[in-house]
Image (tube, rainbow, N blue to C red; front, side):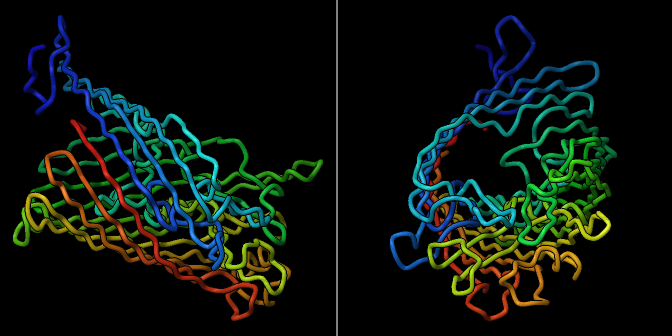
Length: 435
């Protein structure tokens, strides 16, 4: 096959055509402690001193990518596709929450192994247009300084989202994008009755996409972006023969900055993003879809005498008059990565975010065993560090360690609800070839 030098290393001409292709991929093996696969936060499970008190998740993943490009009179025509298989086996810590609070997380899937096909990207780019599955155009900080599946921040790149977008190149590294995106990618719960039974009210069918726009600059010093998103709220009652409905509009605003630091190290940089949302919680915190439902006594009971650590996640709460009381959320994330030499690099990173409910929404969500007047508001923060050793080209051996702290809802100092902090960690071995 003839080498194609138009698009960088690894491309070859497909015989008999003027189309270039690059085949790449990766193989990964990891073990996570007090975390789910791909270092996802432990959002549901036990912190007990017995055999249920810790959680290990073992995961292997392998993927193949195909990047094809050709030149046209309108510029480069590109298609990109990845297909991967994932095998996960969790031990201890046990399954998603069954607490009637709208919480639950597949990362707490118990001890049964599962294997599945997975793809987070399959898209076409042509003349400024992008169509298919990829990351949201709202995203900026994709947490490249950690192996974690982020809690805070907007990034959906790990799972992908369907988009139809257009990017205009304005010169000197400045670009502007407008996109219609699959609204399901940024939907979480709509809650109602006491204890937040999620089947009482739920999202209705998607009637409008999320509309996302950004203004971005990429230059030698780094990158910056401001962005915004519109998110439609549609809810219907599932326990009414009349079929009561409610609707509204949510939104999110954000800003991100990346500064290259060659004066410290060749590839050193610091990156961060701030996001604020109303009625569109997953733009501020995409990594815990459903919220936190943790316990320290091997039980998700809400009875007095149990110990629970909660944080309900909802885009909106249905209050009196069937109105949607939109949840406010904000987050800030960031990290610094330093290369010691060609074989070693270390990062420091952190994140903080908060969900805020009105008094009316808290009155709706508050469990009967919670102290009267206590708030459904909660916050969560993390700090961590990752070190990567690359003994030979394209082989990364990394250790990630992180401290997590939940300032839970209804935390009144009683035995029923409280705050929780814990450590998590992971080891990963990954062999990369052309991405």
